[in-house]
Image (cartoon, rainbow, N blue to C red; front, side):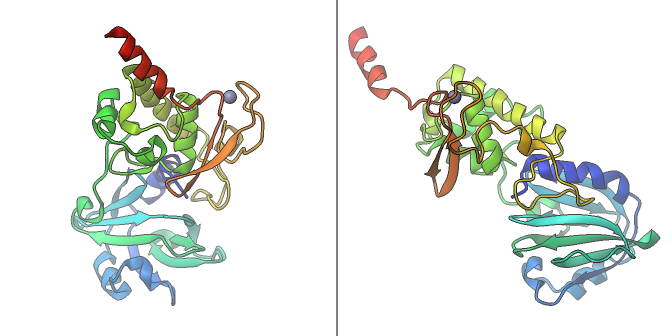
Length: 287
Ligand SMILES: [Zn+2]
């Protein structure tokens, strides 16, 4: 599933290509109507025709195209969605579900094998978004902001990081990688972090996401960018989908467990289970 670095890669590619382009039409392929979440394709087509794209933005894993009509097209790629910027003559990709026809004989194609992706047209971006936590690469995302989201939570750290209301844009790949870098066990209760662990997790999150963006995203299964090319971050992961391979820090075999229903990869030596009993013991001694 595309996460922040993958969506940001697409945004950076599309921004110079789409700004100033006029939309000539919008079409959804038969059988793919549900990507509009109940809206009719002809309704969206009628509203976006003749509009010009003025900005290409990202919030969490959502990509948005601001139009000069003061409306916003909001796209979520979900599991297997991708976008292609093509010449009209370029052969249609398999699983093309929707097409924005643009001026200059260009097209923006929404390609999606599993059809979980969505396209919305709204007046205000917030109308299309659920509650989202801070943008982890923005200045607003401080160690304190992260702790505000995790404080008092008994849920496993891995699950807390995947909850978009806590921090926006993190998915399975970057959650596993950030926890490895911060030396934290994925099942550690989110609200139990000590100050030093909070700041380690905060910098680890930023580091893995920045690295992901630098490498053009991670292509494990389906992800490709708007030109159809793969990213390179999959060659740099430390634990994600490296089950039974040696940890490159200590040599221990990487383990795969399920946390909150999601496959989770970690190094049992670098990310040990918190020694709760020791905490209790030391408290008793200090009395
Ligand atoms: Zn290790």
